[in-house]
Length: 408
Image 1: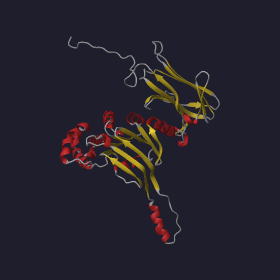
Image 2: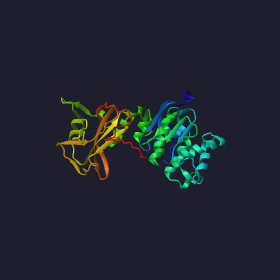
Image 3: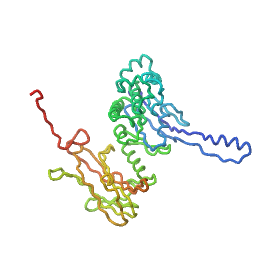
Image 4: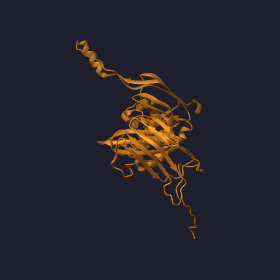
């Protein structure tokens, strides 16, 4: 029952003892002078609890501890301290192909994996048609998994966990491979599953995280950096990713002022943004570009190869659109110190669904194939739309409809 499904992670940590220290202890007993090395922590003091009807996203850079956390939740690993309490049946897609015998067929692997989830042979037999239908592997369902593509392996793995009557679903980057159509199918299943169970979702795709998850935990170097609203977690994480030297360079760290004309000024240590303005007008027959982002910049440093860009997101943090100067053909943009440059992006913005939106801007530089971020301002401008559009993200421009009698 829904009320009985619950997951509790209480102060869980995972560390791996340093094997070097074991060797050093032996050497020290032989009167060799030695020094010790610290244990390696994969995860430190992580706590959260979830009830049925909830989905949590787990984000972080590679090696941050995301997969370790999932392995602790799924029971593959045991915590060094703290506890994991699972109330309900749990089904996981962790490392791609884990638990599969690649010499066996897809059908044979279904029996092996579903058995591990607690299904009897008869229950698996009854579930096989639904698994085969969901996977859409055709004749490959009865061929060895070793000849599958990575996308086909993901199809098989996800199809199994979708049909084992689980209460808690753990998905680790399983949707990052394979075709887009199957990924959409999985997303729809996850959203439907969330209504009755718990979803724990790991992905580097922030749009998928925003679409699925009610809350989010950001882990970095094995430690919790943020736990709470998904949109806020993604904002902080993006600021961390795009910030110089891995530090936060978000709106919260900038001095923001609004001048007498209602335009925004953003003052930072490297680059000032002056008179930021967003214009969005009703499209007329003579105006094919109904929107513009316009601002001045004044840099305190020389930027030899600059890229200036913007992102428009909705209130859930889903990117509606984005663009930058390099993408638009400006390959060698040089910014000279203490010279004011006017930046203007003009574009056609279709009618957006009613709601709140934000604009973020950034300036980066490419040096010898590496990117250095000089400014990234998350949500520097907000705007709302009330055009009466209730469905979808935006309205298609100039859509036409026609019906005729094909038998005439």
